[in-house]
Amino acid sequence: MAIRFLALFQVLIIYSTFLHIILPQNSCNASNIVPKLKQCGFDAIYNLGTSISDTGNSAIDNPSIWQAMFPYGKTINEATGRPSDGLLIIDYIARSADLPLVVPYKNSSALHLSTSRGVNFAYSGAPALSEEALAKKNITLDWAKPTLSVQLGWLDDYFKGYCNNVKDCKEAVSSSLFMINFGTNDYGYAFSQNHNIEEIKKNGLVSDVVEAIKQALQKIISQGARKVLVFGVALDGCRPISVTMESANKSATYDRFGCVKDNNDFCNYHNVLLQEGLKELREQHPDVQIVYGDLYNAMQSILDNSQSLGFKSLTEACCDVDVEIKKKAVLYKDKLCGAHGTIVCPKPEEYVFWDNGHCTQKANEQLADWIIQDIFPKFQCNA
Image 1 (tube, rainbow, N blue to C red):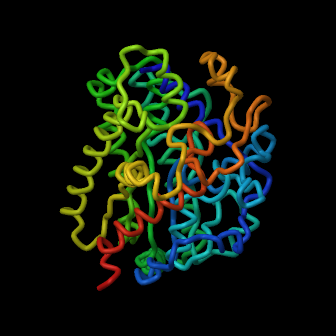
Image 2: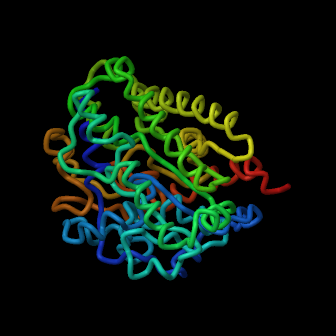
């Protein structure tokens, strides 16, 4: 179990970074997402999270990493800092809300262009827990990551420069959409350091991650947030790197789509605890719309309807290593999309996964569409 999550984790935190950060607005014109969320009246989007929603913060801090090049961005003909061949879920949510694509916090030169339209604080490899909290569970970080707490600090700094006083801030953000996605990286660190699922459940890591998310929600609610979207974790057992690394484990079990059951069951365990935590917060804050972003079932929907959606590959990466290298699992985990020896499929739109840990633009669009349809009535947008 630890081996497959080590490989998955390396993919999650060492992903593509690029020289260009802001995606041209006309790059989204091909999207099938309709501006349904426009009816919700969101004035801005503020996002805290990890690689699945990082639109460039990591790339700004690390512009020389070798992944800062094509084939990432292949479908939109531009490398933008997104870990995909194109757009991410957050991009489609912004489009559906009839808002500009959310500017990365680190891009100070462009931040002023969207002062009242939102900011993206998401960063690759970011854990929910602090380095000290992880250390107490014998989990170490190889380098300092912008944790959930750090990103909350960035949010504070931004609002201090944006608002004249606390009252102004609360009024300004009351109609904004706040999004949070955390958890996968905390578990990735644990599994990469040989902590197994049962141990992680017993040492309280999952409950601590959920508690950190709850505390973050309490803080942004105190700052005036009234509309919050909190994402669970997806079907990590379907990621190409999980499937490949598990192939050496004779006791592994798979579902009918070829996904690793243990991985997906653990993701479900996190999601159940998270939803219980969100229920408690709703009871404490009845005036706040706290909505769960169900990535798990959104991905399941893609698998269930893959044929009609045009997906021909469900657990393989479009940008992957040569098959002979892939057979050597020890080397495979060090071969990322864009490295020497990787091959790009001719039709990314037929693949759910772009690289070994992140979805294609086509899959992100489908995930976003499912999420948007699901959250629309929960935000009472049709009222």
